[in-house]
Image 1 (cartoon, rainbow, N blue to C red):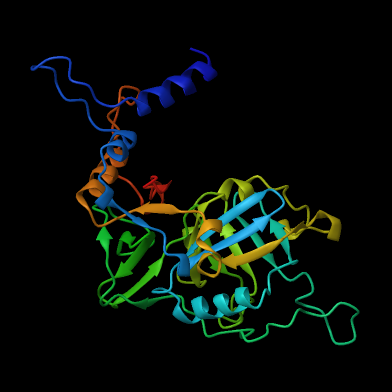
Image 2: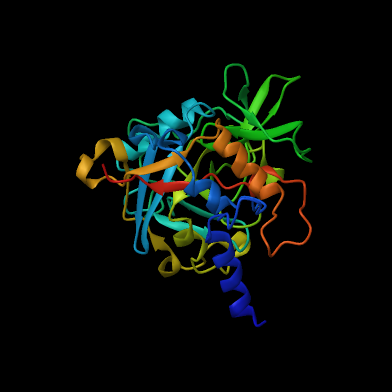
Length: 310
């Protein structure tokens, strides 16, 4: 079987719902597509407009869900930056293969007397105390059954892949594909949200608890992950003309309802999501011959869909 036919067969097999051909026919194990197809409206919730950013780029719109419970001070600061239109006209500065795309002010490191000076932050703050972890007390958490190499326990908190240390009473968001975090210098408290990045490669979990994580991309990650790679160190663009402009960044709640993208996220605290986890940790559809019986937190996608028409 050539590779094109094989990929088509895998996609087709995962999309076909289970069908019973007789009373004695064994039930086929559910795929993720089956779980989603069988989900109920109560298994989903609307993306909160007050926690949602729209970043418009020449290639399209990237939608980011912020996580105020895990970085409340940075959440408030980013909202102040966005409402002050800080990011409008700035740029994608860096695209490092299998790692991150980063955006912010190209003149952030300018010195006094330079022609181009850093953009003022308005009512926001330039830097904040790091929020690498928060107290786990009171946070919702759906744990995975499998051990993790980077944390005592991993799972999902609300709409986000997360980890926690019950003994230390701490929790944090994990670096998975699409994770959005705050760029910083060597000083832990040198970031504030003026530079942000999104993970576009294999999950760099070694960054966990070393950077303030503020959310995740819920739509449009392919726009970021397919950007031309920077040729400078760490994937930075070496020439101004290589940078991709950021047209605008807006809070969904600041736009009229007709201009919003109405998305729903699958809840992670339901039997339906538990079934989705199992469908991923033990792949039993026909193509798989040996179920793994194990999964890591970054290998369980949290489904996002366009809200059904009412």
